[in-house]
Length: 296
Image (cartoon, rainbow, N blue to C red):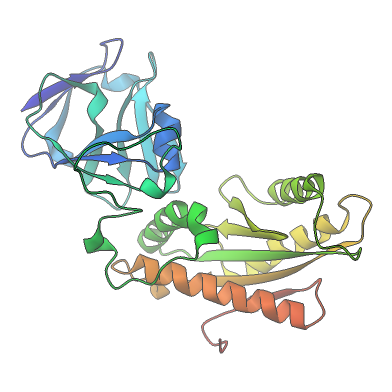
C-alpha cells in the first residue's frame, strides 16, 4: 500500500493492492495537462484506489470522448484519469507521497516528445503504444498522427455506446493559378471549418490545402449534412474563388473491432481518401460518401 495527496493536501488517497509499472507518457494532452515534458502514471484497479479525504473536491475535464481527467478543484493537482471502457484508474505519480515501491518501465508516445527534452537513460521508447499493442497493425499515415490518440478514444467509446463515427477529408481548390496558398487563407479556412462543426468534433490540418474532421457519434446522413455546411461556408472565404472537394466515411459500432482499433483507423481513413478523390474526379465542390459497399 502507498498513499498520495494533492498540492493543498485536501485530497488524500490510499492505493491498496497491486499497481502496475510506471509509464512516462509524452502525448500532447498529457504534456498540456501537466505543463511538463511528460506525465508519469501507473495503472490501479478501480477497487484499489481509496480516497481518505477530499473526494468531493474532485472535478474532471473530458480531454477526449470517454476519457476524464480528475483534479483537485482547490489547487489544480491532477490526481487520476479514467476511460469509460476501462476498469482501472490512470494514477498520476506526481501526487504519490514517499516511495511507492514501483519503478518506470518505458516512455510512450515519444513521437510527440517536447523538442527541448532529451531522454538520457536505458528505458525503452515507443512512438505510440508498446510493441505488443502495435504488432500486426498497419501504420497510420504520418499526416494523421495528430488525430491518432483522439481517434482511438472515439472508437473505443463508439463501441461501448454502439454509435457511429465519421471522418471528413477536405481538399481546398483555389481559383487562381498558383502553387501555394497564403497562410492567412489557410487560417481563415480552418476557422470556417471550426465554426461549422460541434465542440466534440476535431479539426486537423493534414497538409497543404487539406483538412481532416473527426465526427464522434455521427452517422453517414449527419456527416453529409455537416460536410455540406462546411462546403458552403468555405465558398465565402477571402476574395478568391475557393471551393472544396469533401470525402466522407463512416464506421458503425458493429464495424469496429475493439482488439484491432488501428485497423479500424486505417479503414476509415482509406474510405475517406477514396471519397475525396471521387469528389475531385466529379469536378470538385462536391461531397461524396464512401461506405463498406463502395469498392476502393
